[in-house]
Length: 175
Image (tube, rainbow, N blue to C red; front, side, top):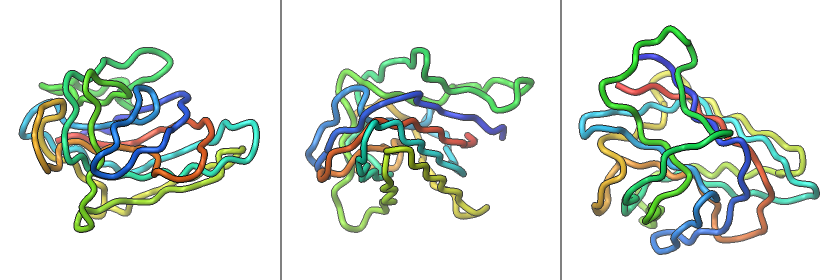
């Protein structure tokens, strides 16, 4: 496995209700595998605030209850690539995106893991590093319809507060 970095240069999150709210394109980040057998293992998340005044970003990392349909390919300045330039390409590329024809819906069940990653976007930064063996895992194919699964992970804003602009970088591996 080779490390990759999924990076969103700037976005302003908008509130999304659990289990029902559909995020607006460009206000969330989503990651998933390119094939049914893919495993994404996230080891590091870095958020950097870009707001011009104090703004609490009530961010949440959670699984999708309904996958996206037809994810939109990333465009510059956003990116997803190998941390090491000499790495060999995967047979199927991961599906990381910030927009889709039908966006994913964040899981609303109380039995599903979610990670609250709130911070002040007015110059604040937050780094979340998972210890080896405790990484955030996504399994399977992204961008397909379906009910509760573990194939897409959504990084979006909870439905309270008024968020400010921020950037996001996620270091991960795919097997």
